[in-house]
Image 1 (spheres, one colour):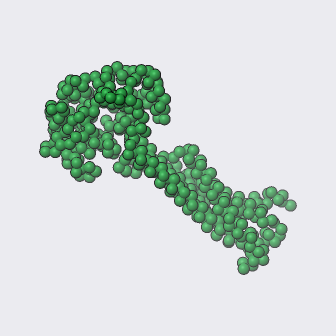
Image 2 (cartoon, rainbow, N blue to C red):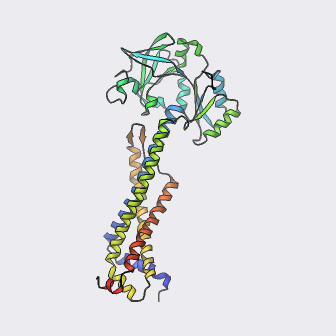
Amino acid sequence: MIQETKIPFFLVWRFLKRGNKWTFLLIIFLMAIAFINLVFITSLFSGIVESANSQIIDTYTGHVSISPVEGEKFIPHATEEISRIDATPGVEAASAQVFLPASLTYKNRSGNWSVIAIDPAAEKEVTNVAAKMTAGSYLDPADTDQIIIGRQIAGGEGVEMNAFSFKGATVGERVTLSLNGQTKEFTIKGIFYTKFIDTDQRAFITRGALNELAPTYDDVATNIVIRITTKGEEQLVVDRLQKNGVTGTFYTWKDVAGLMATVTNSFVLINALLTSVGILIAAVTIFIVIYIDISSKRQQIGVLRAIGIKSYLIRSTYVIQTAVYSVFGVLLGLGILFGFLIPYFNAHPFQLPIGDATLAVSSVDLIFRTELIIWVAILSGLIPAFIITRVKMLDAIFNR
């Protein structure tokens, strides 16, 4: 006589062994689709948020930025401050920037875009603008009459803010920079496109070019951007900088994210909403699949009850069977996710105005959703099992 506790496992084995193999595979596939649907949406929105955050850090602010103390226009002795910053544990690189109250003129078009004087070598260590050149080349430290401009300034067909741009400026053409009543012509050495609009509305010249145009800006900065070794330790690095004697007003990239913070928060809320919908869809899908599967075994269940097998043991059988379906479905879903979807979207990322987004899968989130889909499956399978086992025994046997 089979022990009572072993009956559900014995019945599951018999059901799976004697059941239709194509039906079994179809249920596993549907479970996998439900799981992928739940994980894919979250991974996509996480990838979008991660892409937006990376754009802010890599092209705009660094991890930490320092502006002048309140009431001052400049950070004095910028070279000395940079040396002190570089010596601080946790700092990978730092770059001093000078934002100029300047305007640019190209042919008969002009505008007050952000013109920034930089040390090209130092800036290259903090931001990745140098790697985003779509035409021409990046600045060299010795360039005193060259300028690089963002795509939104250059303009042209397909540019988002073309109406306010130069409407098609190209490498080799000349623009006039006006600063405090003085003007100087610069040759466009390169055009960059970071896919982050705030950065793509910037233009860069060298500190050498600024010193020739306005020597009063020598060895000062209006902003210092810092790249740190470990993301997430921004406040720790700020505390170390302050203890090391670095002065100024400190901001992390989150503090200056502005509109992008609102956008990413919106994505987080949408993600939570779609996750809830995904869970509901998964629950309904699993319920229907299990209900149909159990209904097809209605006579078998009636016979099992007639020979003395208790209803709770039959319900336990379908709970275990549903767990088997969900575990195999999750394994298949993980195989599809990591074997196909993630590699595909890494090679072909989503092209978005705020940057290229891939699927960002968090291990903690993945474990949570794996457990969630299994429990949802078990609960969704338990309901039809209760329904069927409450049918009168003779009605179940004779399908009445």
